[in-house]
Length: 130
Image (cartoon, rainbow, N blue to C red; front, side, top):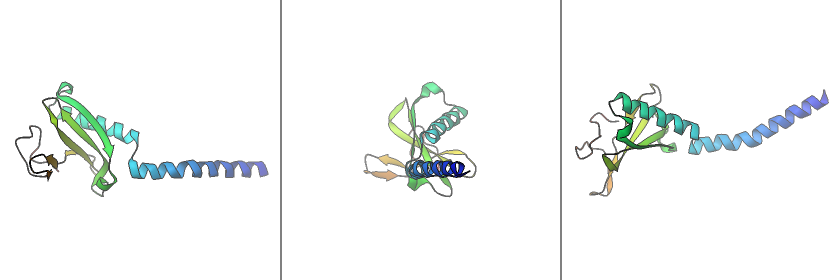
């Protein structure tokens, strides 16, 4: 019986030593599984909106702790389209509904700042972005 208690204590200690840093890292930096899922969901969202896979140059997901709010999940995706390789479009996922939305903000080289206003210069920008 004493060996059983030692084994349980050892397993618990190992889980605590290994698990605590992993949980902290996940909270600060996200994880690759969520990134993969976000990339896949954004790809499916774009296809449902009429885009084809050949229209998309890249989709890369990342995590930003500052974006992680009650409304929006912290994992977002940056999409670059083949016909507009210099522009990056950010897509976010709403926490409650799970819906994917395009975020409005973008970096404007002319002003040297981030802008939120709709512009026709960006071919793939939606008027009803978040």
